[in-house]
Image (tube, rainbow, N blue to C red; front, side, top):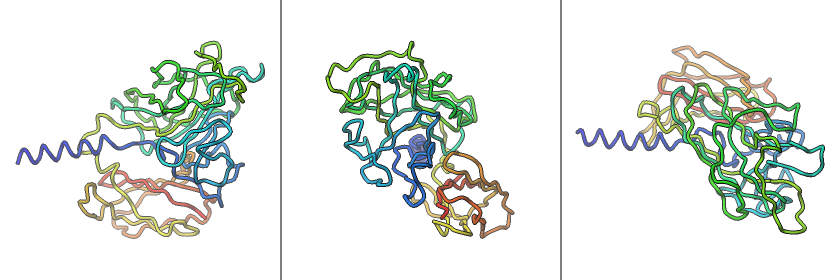
Length: 330
């Protein structure tokens, strides 16, 4: 009996440890073309991602046809995604002219749940140098915070100190993806992050690409597979990440119905749980609705007729944990 209990604990711990808290970590989940237009920026075409400053990040996809930034070949170079069909890209340094001194592009993202104080999180993402830039750099990192920390009033380097930094040295590789990783002990409440070069030009480590006829006087990198995983998560927290909820209809126009049935991990079946509260956020993490649920309420209905067209996330708080699911408002 002890051996069975130990085995179940190990299996559960492995499943919990392996849960990535980053929303849309490899940029595969996209906003429908009927909703997204170029003027949607700073929101990116991939849900959960956005520009974190006035500098413009880019989205590249083998399948998303709403924008003219394909993969593997695009204006910055040639590169297949590390996984899936998409990746993003940003400039970490530019030398076009004096007016572009300290110009930066930052990619902002969000987590499906806030980080817990004192927990250790294993953080990683992958980058590769684009073919057409004249510079290589080592300065790239991630800054985590309780709020989005965006600043659209500037396209210069943001004044944050990243908790995760590149320790690989200058990244020269234009073919293979390089992993940037580190551990972070959470202060508690962090739900957003920004990736980019937080150094000014004077403190940015560079090397020049000696090839001729390069298109851009910049250090430009593609990024894919962003991950934030709780390395200390225990057996009692597994269901918070494994539970799923049912939303109907999806897409929704007027009324959204939420099923209180949650699916247990490892194929253990379905249970009806007690939902306590609902929270709906848009793709930038702005809370648009918070609603308490009566203890005897079985069929939960939300009026979304006044919501702006777009992508939203329903976060359900229950006695069995937290469940998150996306829906589209038409």
